[in-house]
Image (cartoon, rainbow, N blue to C red):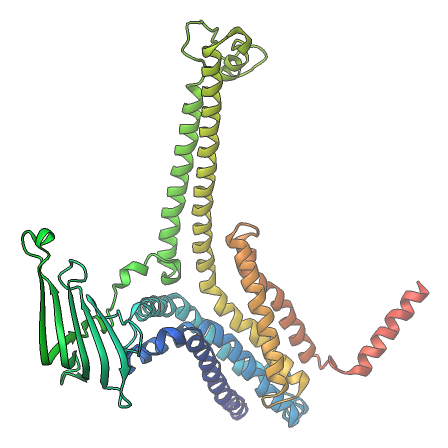
Length: 486
């Protein structure tokens, strides 16, 4: 048995590792395609791009691991069934359960590992990925002046080049607008031609200009009356521009640490307690404030005295209700006093309505934030359970279809994964917005696919002809026959 287990495990592991890295590569390429505009043309170092792709590959594990496991199991047991190796095992007295035992143990170990990845590794990688991606998106494009376009990416300067030479370094018809004194466009440099070169340390760009002029508005005392102006001609002038603003600035990770995706189970539990306490306090504050506000409207300060009972009486009505019922009718008031009463009533009602609407939106936002934290808390466990569910789908289904390679197994595994992913996405979104119970929303895909996996496992272990057309034909004939007799 040890040799058999070793053979099955060896056949599975190679396929699993290969498919896992292929799936991760596909997810990373999807990320690159999605954010290609933010990565290209900014002169990013290879180290920065490699770091970003590394964190992206880690965040792709929750999507890649179940799909790779399902595909590898289908291919492994499909190959064993296609070459009649499973038939030989059963003929030797080795049941399907015993042949699945080593990979079941591997799947259990993988589920435990998946939990630690979801709880510890994914939050850290997501935090670093989000921070670094934000820095890359804020990064300016690499220094690249285009013909006939005003270039504004160098701080305090605007550069215009009428034409560039074929080598890309010679420029003609140069205009440089200097705003470094923070007083508007007071300095302008023009030149017939010039050459752009980088400094030896690659930190500055040097403009060597030929046959040009410097125009300067003198801004000394009384310049608004005298309007002094200075013009200076030159045959050659060297101007240096710093490229420090093009360097990637790394932001602090603290700005994203409060996001639920960047927390582990312990942090999510603590955050949930704080959010619930804050929501309860907000609800209590609103309720008490609303009650006090309407308690003040038990009468109007006029020269007419009202009868205002202070205790509950008359058929058990509350005191506030009695006071409202015993107010004099508006017909008792005339003129300006009546208009004031109506205006005050309308204004009070509108204020109350606006207050209720605002607090409804605020409490709804708080409830949505709590639901997002709950969703992330539950999702720490879904990856582990998904690995087990896909084991009970992949291993028996592979032995039933008896097809290896990358043909039918890929189609089946992708189909099941799409069902799992769509159910998860739709149900989780409904749960976050309060249209579905949170537990049901997060675990719906697992609850749907678990019976499917158990059904396939039962059929595989009992040697049922699941995809045999004749057996299904006989089954429906018997079913219709019983229906007609009834």
